[in-house]
Amino acid sequence: MSKLSLLVAVIAGFAVVPICRAAESSSARVPVLLELFTSEGCSSCPPADRLLEILDEKQPVAGADLIVLSEHVDYWNSLGWKDPFSSPQYSARQHDYTNRYNLGGVYTPQLVVDGRYGFVGSDGKEASAAIQKAIRERKIPIAISNLARNGNQVTARIELPAGENLKGASGILYVALADNRQESHVARGENGGHTLSHVAVTRVLKQVGPIDLGASVKEIALPIQQGSGNGLRLVAFIQDSRSGRVLGVAQQKL
Image 1: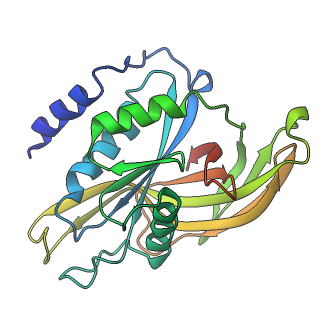
Image 2: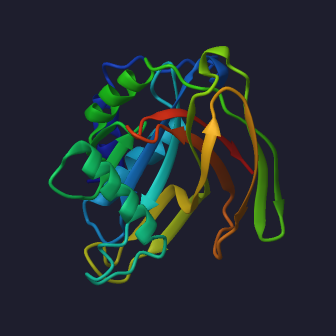
């Protein structure tokens, strides 16, 4: 499918969703985490990569601040092309989601919205419906400050403001370091001969651990991976340890 045809299809998929006005501030929108499980070895994945790029750059859903992560799985690597951005960690994370949904197995591309809704990653209509559900949920505000690149690592402060109704409650804090953009010329496999581009390519995903939802401050440090040179973004999110639901998410770009 050509990029133009795909863009038309994506717009059609979001036809029922009001488009964000340029004047709408991010503070007035509900942050929603979109995780795309993808692979350069999968011929069905490039349309999903393109959809993720549109969601990231165009922010087409009114009321939603879409925060995206591209997580490249490794189970396609034995079929002719080793995805340079793949990791068994992301495959394991997708398996965990699959077990929560009681599905028969993992597949690519798969898009998971706020840790709750999983579907084929190139399906714009499903994405629209899931995002609309996600923005109805209350989110815990997360503040990222003191973000800095120091040599071969990124440091930052993650802070949750005091919330009386959340005193004593906890969740699991994760932080991810992602390349804003990446590109590969695929020499072999199902996408052999094609140049593929990606956004928000996750290079590091760290489980910081339990965090008090009432009020907390965490100082974090993440290593910068070799080949990361096209701009970086830090994403912090909190998940419920039992359901996997994303309770809050924020990002900041370097």
